[in-house]
Length: 320
Image (cartoon, rainbow, N blue to C red; front, side, top):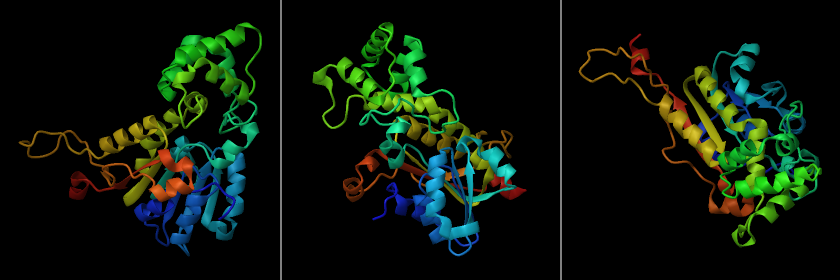
């Protein structure tokens, strides 16, 4: 076993992408490079991969892990939502496969100074890309109560959002900013009635998740990526997305369904006039989840959901 972040649903990703020599793949959440390594091994000796991550530290880890593949890997520090621009910058016109593994890596969670985890007393940060100005500290200490409450409810589905925000406001009115993850976790735990504390997770889990999503605009990034990536997939190319949050999974499911819809014209018309083309064939009618064995070995994988689709040629395109 290596010291890197454990790669979730690795074999399932490979089974769906079916990497082949000579093909080009896009990994928009490179992280420590686990999925990328598997893709490059499976597409040996000539498969190539564009590895993107907006976390500079993650990129350095991946570069070390993937150095054996040399020029077969292109590393880019960027947000995957900018896939259209960055592929054009690389003069790439089409891809044979694309992957996103959303969420936070073990390395990010375990580093106190990144501020993702409430298990340590690190600075309240949560930025994936430290070049961004707004951190969790700014949200917690500067946002107006209604907006902060909306974030906790919408992104964390936190039913105690109002009580938590009241507790945060009380701390703010006393002139003591909330500066560490430990501070915030204690405030949340005190605001949630003890009888309603979850049995298996910390009561601040939903709150931290919501703040992380808001800080990094994770749902907006995913929406933007899905709108762009389909334009670069070759016929037969696969797209695989692993999500860890119900809102993310909902966006992926809705987008795949939209792209999988074809002509909407009435059947009595002799030819299509609506111009809508079927772009994707959904490969996973229900999301793939980790096996009990994988969950036992890696508890953090328990909320993972994988959805996949294949770029297809529509009836209209075939007639041209």
